[in-house]
Length: 239
Image 1: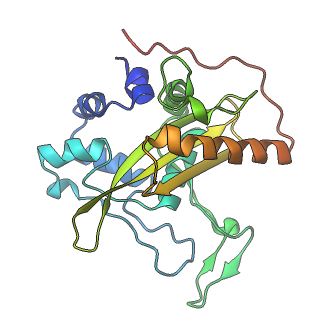
Image 2: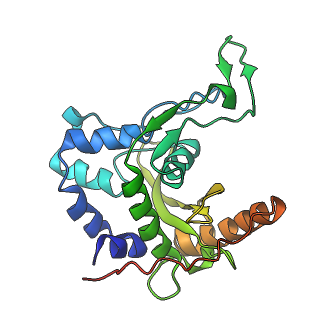
């Protein structure tokens, strides 16, 4: 597989092989740059900052697991902002729940007026990642064709997370997700769908994809966003 194929097929092995080209400090720098393991500071009480082991805590084994999404934890706002960083050309915009400005009971000012912008990856890297993420919803090679939005280019990624129970260990259930943006080549919206312990079998594409498609289609229609008219990426998925 190429890296596009690894992403399209959600290959854990491929992800590990790619991440092996990064040392522990570089991997941690990128993950924290995307906002993982750090509070979003949107102003809501009780937010979990997630878990991201420091470079010193990473072993060769959990570094591999971290690369494909285990041995760490995140919240939905963090992941939405991370996906949105790719949609935004590699610049992370700190998330907000308030348009404008508001003051919390603790006297902290929050809202979009106070959002910060941080360059995480280059515009070129973000664009190439977008092209690879488009293959995820491809009918022929992707695992999430049900996340397509008719008439629009969509870039996204599936997720499957083991859930932690009351005893602190995995309880056998899963959280399935799909996060993406559209139009892929001129993004207007980022949507992230998470379904906890679904009662049906499937993955993030088959379970979260349809909800993503409906939400994104509604947003694009409501705000009158026209299709770009360009063709979806055909980035090769195999060498």
